[in-house]
Each structure stands twice: as C-alpha cells, then as structure tokens.
Image 1 (cartoon, rainbow, N blue to C red):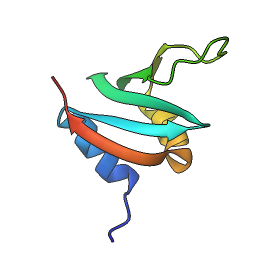
Image 2 (cartoon, one colour):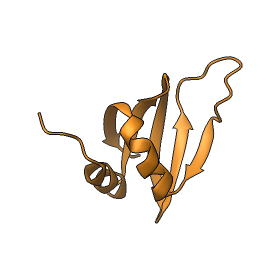
Image 3 (cartoon, rainbow, N blue to C red):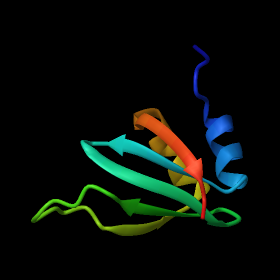
Image 4 (cartoon, rainbow, N blue to C red):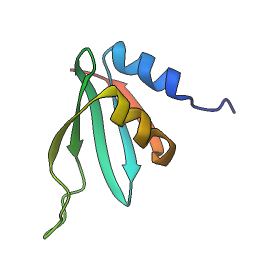
Length: 78
C-alpha cells in the first residue's frame, strides 16, 4: 500500500476535499478555506471537552499535525 504523504494531503485539500482524521482520540474534519487558511472542526463531541469545536489553522500548523494524524479519510467538499 502506498504511503500517504503530506504533499498528497495538501493537494487533496487544494482540490476541495475535506479530510477527516483522528488526533488524540478525537475525530476532526479539515478543509481549505483560502490560501494558507484551513478550518478544523471537532467531530467527536464530548461533555466537558477542553478542545475547541472550530479552529482556523495555517498550512504550517497542518504540517506540524500531519505526523500525528491517524485514520485519515477524505471526501469531496460540498
């Protein structure tokens, strides 16, 4: 099986895909909003969770998170 690379993730985000992934036992959805601007939505809603439900990220932050992303899936944006 081919290794999923950051370059592929970045390309798929630029093509309008939404990426869903697991990070620290939480499920998130990542999508591109504008150049160097990405929205991250928390899909796993837990009571008393310290994680923000929505966040805006830069490409640099997405690149820092990439090695820790697990169970990466993508879908076509709406």
